[in-house]
Image 1: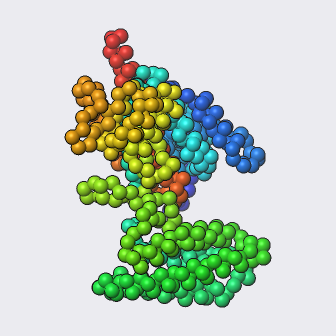
Image 2: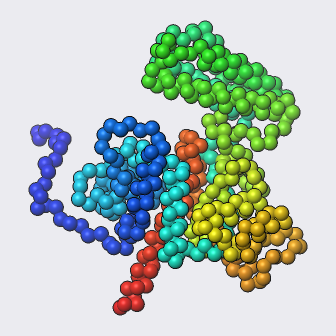
Image 3: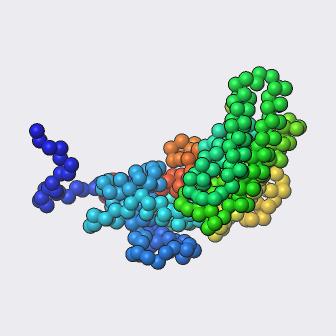
Length: 463
């Protein structure tokens, strides 16, 4: 019987043959067009902002910038990006790895993207927009804007669910903490374990057996009481825990940090939960996630989806179809405030205001229109409310309505195809970076399409 062969012999060198790449391939076109020197400079700036060990070789900025672009174009995870760069010839070309066998692994790509952060991705997207404008594909004279919600990958927020999530988080992290430490208070741990079982039983009773409103309210009060006890015991544990004295090492440190974060977030949620149980009304601007308190319940007023849970973004579309996304410092700001911010973002990016500006009727506000006018916008094509008249003539109105209608389609494309919606990132920063990657993916593919179309036109003309 032939033994199982665990490895295969390397074929001779004359076995290999060069494989041609189409010149109009998406990654080939972008590799020849994008400003890689600028991206490397952005990476160096953000590297200087971080405390990074000086050991090892200087990072391969050009290759890693290409790896980030590959991951964005394919909307894939880090391991898939590593596999593409290792085995997919256009991806290797984009990363400038034609004459080497080296490939960055998924950890290296992750660290590099984390180093870039939100600001780095935003700066790269800005450079793509400026490049499109310089090439004549984007016209900054026309701007249409809208708002959308990046829905969070969280269950429907309920007070019982919050208290149950808090209990489960404490239980899992407490087990890890005690397995990676010595000398922590056993009495506190025993009390918390008893509370875990009581909260679990009451949550089960609330979901399965409480059939009346009175029974559910009574269980809510009991759950709140037990959650307060659990929060108090957790506070004692965090006060008494000492890294050196209790020899907390490895994953125990991470579990301790998770417990502290859960304690802080749940302490902020307790007044909101108490108000709901006592008054039966939801607090305005309530926290909808224990692990991401930045997420909000945003009233959209849409049929079938009146409220969306997540982050609110503004979307700018310049004439030509390229998009930029931004977030107001006050996430719950009205659409009229986002309209003003849209013009400010456009000026920041292109250095001058647009000539034409379009927005839907949610931004119809005399004060905000005056503010937009003062920023230098000539034609303000905001859809009027009620029986009011448009502030522009019929020719500008028709053109801006057509351009404004395209924004909804681009939002849908980013949400459906490019990972804008329901990101699986665990942190608020990770969720925002997924939105920035979606916008950058859209712009890169749009740029490659425009470049390829122009190349075909030139070839047809010369023929």
